[in-house]
Image (tube, rainbow, N blue to C red; front, side):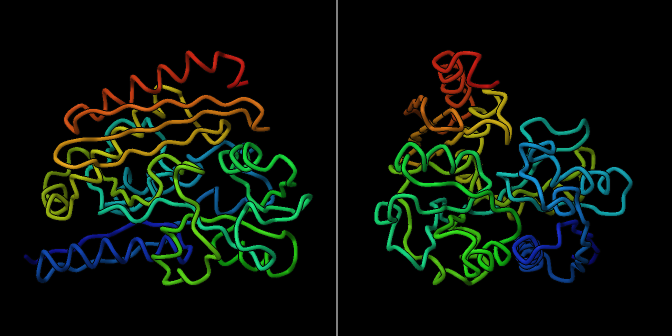
Length: 304
């Protein structure tokens, strides 16, 4: 079909790679479709000297982009789903998910082959409270140094000796064609990823029927089942960047779905985990139920 579409995105190499993937998939399905990439600088990109939990959380990566959807300067927005709030502004929605990439964590170090091999007192660079908590659960003898910035910035900080190791989402490295940077991968049984890690979502206006019809052709339903369960868990916990929360849903064959969730204190001293198995048709309900159980187990103080 003929037509044009403006895609809003952050300007980091990874964000652009994700926007290009959406563009390429759409153009493969719709011959003649013209797509313009519109780079929007968000508050989360501008403020690099503080961790997200101190400056307002994950919504800082989406607010300005969503303003572009409202004012019509862009037609759709491409996000890492782990950066998207569970409650979206009225009139906007995530209509489309691309096939999920590997959700595991990549361990990166020139000092040790894996997390267990780091000497006591080693410094791990990460700004993620979820990673910090799980590192402290596994290796309470390690030090944590906050690391902000895009993939290349964090790798530069590591090479400069600001830390002995760091962790990144393996999905991001794959999309940047940088998989060889990973020293090893951390299995999800050892460290659960962020909710929706590895999933790319496309946000648009709920009343834009023509654009929604375009997007339907690239939507991946299997990823949607996983993300629906994980985000329902997160919503039940009222989760943000200020609370260490992890979750992963996996397809188990047929219409089966397995969900695991974790909530912890930032120091890793207290943690609670749950799991659920059921049908993909009950994905959101499974997530809500698991999240409510985690909230009850954790009690109110863990969110202080």
